[in-house]
Figure (spheres, one colour):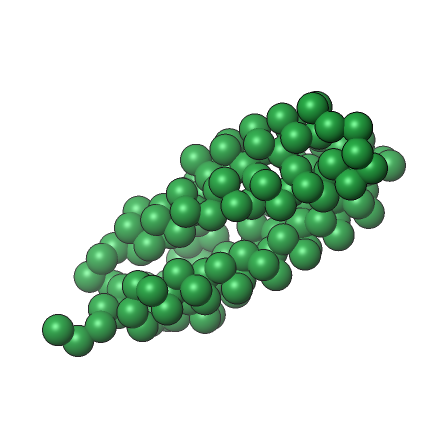
Length: 141
């Protein structure tokens, strides 16, 4: 898959992650508050994104490298760790939006703005740090 198509698929997966992120945020905010709920919603969405990206975006790389349960868990935790830079940026933007806005949809706007901010960082983390270049199917030259 070409890098452009991979980025588009990664973005589509991210859109589903945004929906999951927002749903978990609103479902748990009354119990955990907006900041605690955001931490839980982010981990939940990132887990869903890992699964979807593994099967659709980076299929050729993930299928050959990780097959057993221990290897699968290693890939999962590596994915979470590689998303760390994007996660920090995502959460910082989210916190800034809800701190500066009194709009009733500020948490949703914060999730959206944070997701966009972290998208590029997370794509390159997943593509170049987590999955070695040699494992990523490149377009023919």
